[in-house]
Length: 164
Image (cartoon, rainbow, N blue to C red; front, side, top):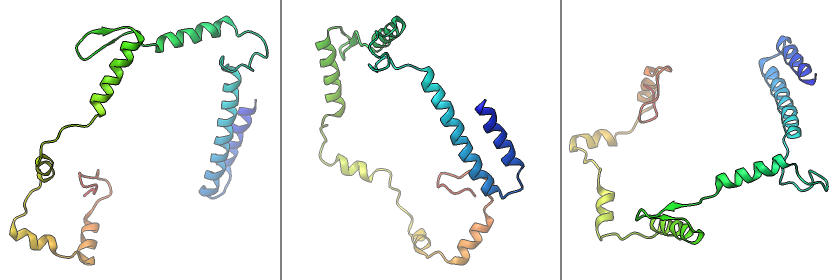
């Protein structure tokens, strides 16, 4: 079997006294070959009933016709409930329900003057005057180095993305 050949190759590569980087490259190449081999076998076993050339002039088997019909029926929307709770079952009513929903969802909204400015300014915290000088101070290389040396590499990053 060709798969056993590739697995033997993998074992041989792992046993070679070469650099890990070279081993990694060779292993990735073999992995790609195994995946291609698997995909080719999978394509050979699956049949796409929609491909008209697959049967070369013959009618598709009954199994594929039944599976296609089941798939189509499972995806068919037969009824939908509109915003008033009424079931819509005709094609036109279902389409109108979807269009109405999309218009309400993505249509323009009315905005009261001044509310956008109020929303933009909401949540901003005023900093006390004694902190302004500290915030404006420049960060020196020594301070940065001190903070970085205090960090440990085994902590999960906090809300600011830094693990300390």
